[in-house]
Length: 126
Image (cartoon, rainbow, N blue to C red; front, side, top):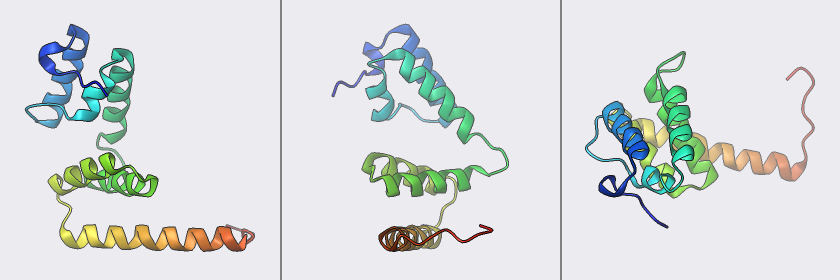
């Protein structure tokens, strides 16, 4: 997998990288963005969408990061799980919160598999 470093990036990619760095307050973009930069339109579209979705709204930024972490873990994406664990910790997720999140995630996975295996009909009114 090719990773596009800042020094090797085209101007349109550097523009996105600069926005990521400024928005996140980081010195460099992570490898996910460097990998997406092989196709600049996808890099820009993905960054703009992520920036919009993760912006403060009805859900606070920590809650959004914890949801992203849970979805990433459930999907089995080690990269996104690591990235969003770090982001959630930076936004205030404690060890206790992380532990409870993992407990809920594990319980949901277990009961989801049981419900599917048993083919439990959905209750009326749900």
